[in-house]
Length: 145
Image 1 (cartoon, rainbow, N blue to C red):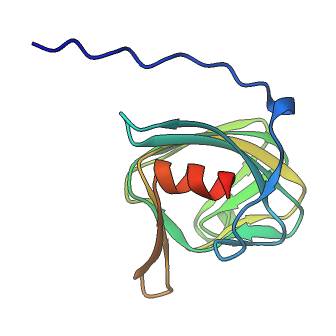
Image 2 (cartoon, rainbow, N blue to C red; image 1 turned 90 degrees about the vertical axis):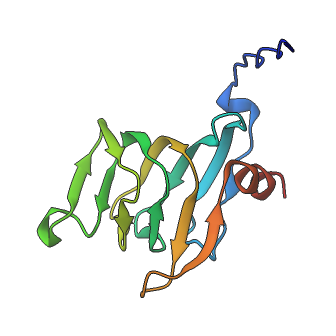
């Protein structure tokens, strides 16, 4: 039997990382992010997002589940509570189940959140057809790019 090496621990100081523009093909309004961790063995990735007032993520669904911590501001998920979704006010924790679909994720005020994606995030056309699938590897390549 071959003994596999343990994955190395790491600690990241947020001030050591640059804010980078989140791909404008996947968002609008100037969302920035810092890629914090990629976990090939779990297919997971973790990032922190800076979302200016009026910004939003394009329609997407979570292929795997995810967890987030809204540290600042407000996030209207699936159109917000007035449209049958959730209105999340900081500080708040949220869980997104596998296959959770988000046609609208908007930030009406300056906001910031930390999220771990346990699997890819698929950005979709209005009819649900995937147009971009962001895996742990794609995320780290986009941030490095």
